[in-house]
Length: 171
Length: 200
Image (cartoon, rainbow over all chains, first blue to last red; front, side, top):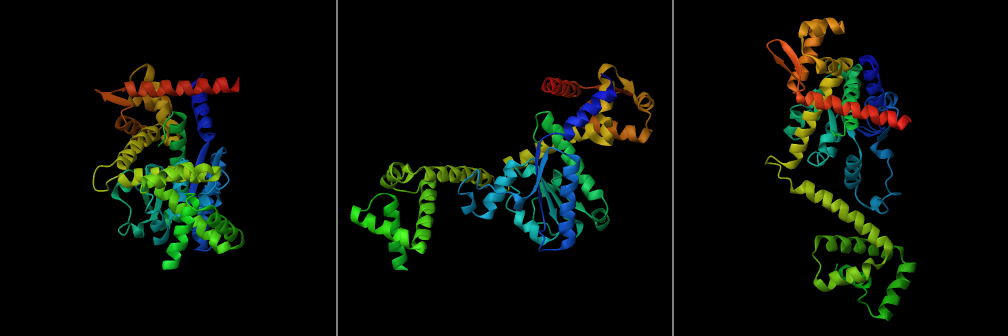
């Protein structure tokens, strides 16, 4: 098998890797532009990774497989979502979502987070510095937000996670 | 307030099987007809499960939970879930945010691996291509550039990333695949074999 064929095969395997991906962020009741961006991120992931189960947190109902979980508070449920996923993309467009996820950032699954925060909140972030140091929190500007740059960043991260998973690593 | 405490105490005794049969029937009759009372029972049930998990019950109560309260399969299942969640939380909570903690170690390890795999997928998988080329024989950067038909800067970026991750090394201008690089490629070949077996 030649190089090209071998690399094509690995690319194909990576793109068809089974992944659970969460996309957290503003809901439809908030800013429409940000919700639209969240939907766009979800759609792009689904297009590129056809075997990925890509969900908004609010779309997951664990009560069928974990009877009684719906009686726990939302924080517990979302922590379980994080534990079950491979990547959790957080569109942190305002102060609100940041505060919501602040209590997950020291969980054993925090390494799965990809928090995308607007640069205007860079100095006000309440997240631990380690998240920035290890590239779990990245900052974007208006131009990156408006163009495909942000989505490409997400897709690159997922490609790396999928490729690592194929190799037997969780990153 | 006193009445609420008494009501809860009664329900707790009911759940632990401590009531006389007449009182037990009385409670059960009320549970069937009073929705608010039933809601209260669920709350007390949850508190009892939490107290059991955290080990704050007396020995007698602990034994009664095991023998009576958990005789109901649904409660056992709920308790199992609660226990799993509490364990998860306690692991997170025990991490001291001021020290070099476990979750930070995980962040760092994940980032090291992401950099390694990222170096291979970068520039449309050029990193992986380069590693493959270097697996069999060391090459100069210029030789890689001509083999890949790419610009110097693109190749240099990929090469630097591979060096930083320890997948290749440069000695006197020559680029070599390291042991880590060879192992990574072997791992990929195993994935290829798995794929072939799957298709068979």
